[in-house]
Image 1: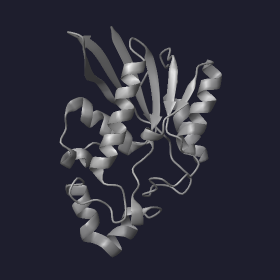
Image 2: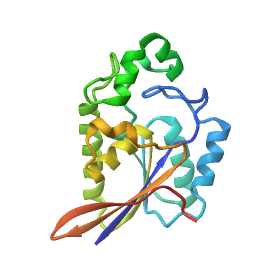
Image 3: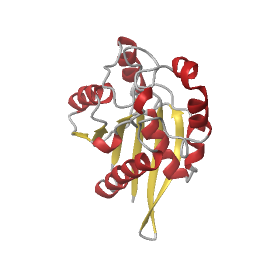
Image 4: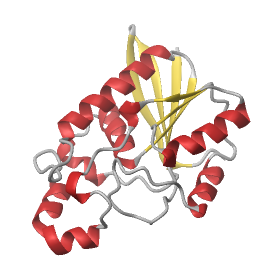
Length: 200
């Protein structure tokens, strides 16, 4: 029994790269093009899961309508809240909080964003969402449309990567990663099949 789960990061939002976390910015025109291009040649998914934020959800809705498959909003797949860094670029933060941001990059577990969500709390909610998804959809093919932090967290769970090393994984706009979950001796065994790959 095998479950295949494709993880798709949203495309470029309006306003370009910044720490937007829980900010609900829409996709830019380029972002829409990136995501539509990313799913060309896709496999036959049975369900789409999406973060409730519109840079994920609006594309998930469009794709779900095209494919005539259900779209599920999953709040546990919403991006990490970056607190006082929300809406700011890395350059801007480095100019005012160089030590805080560089320490966060080196060891995000022990250096959370000021006023933001702790990484252990973020891990717990993403893990709960992931485990529920895997349990509910055994032997199916799914698409998850989410954020870089959520995809990093899922991959860290699959690969058992320490949280301190989470920022070493790069998840580009509209990139795709595939996880296959096999049942071995009655227990789910997840494996990373490809990261930042293509369907065609």
